[in-house]
Length: 135
Image 1 (tube, rainbow, N blue to C red):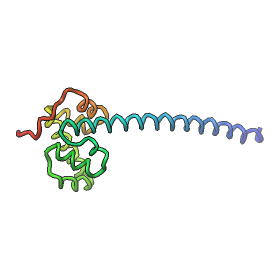
Image 2: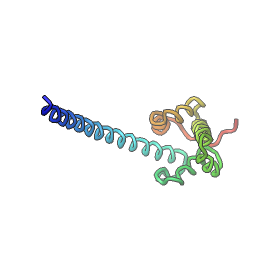
Image 3: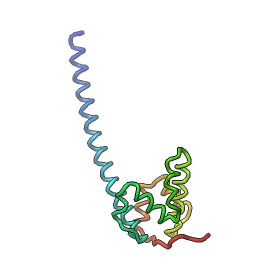
Image 4: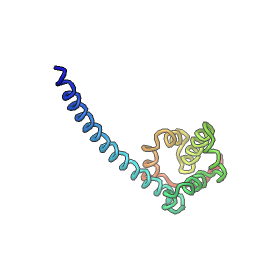
């Protein structure tokens, strides 16, 4: 029996490795599809706001353009790099972004916490960019 144990363990490890690789491939495909949908949504949001769509794929510039669309100053970009403070300001930007598209603060929280659902809704839905609001 002790001679069979290493063989059984090797067979089990091989099956586990194949399953893990299969999950890795499926996970990669799902991630890639989600990435493409989010880039398309950001592109459409930028175009709705009168900005060039290609700006969404340029790392730092896209954040600056998103701040402009939300009606916030460009220097808020530096606040995003401060731990915890950056998270709060990112949530505020999402809320302002929603308001500038005629949506409420709840939709903005959806953008912040469930962006993979709410950004495509904002992009491909009937929301129109109304510019910076005055509350």
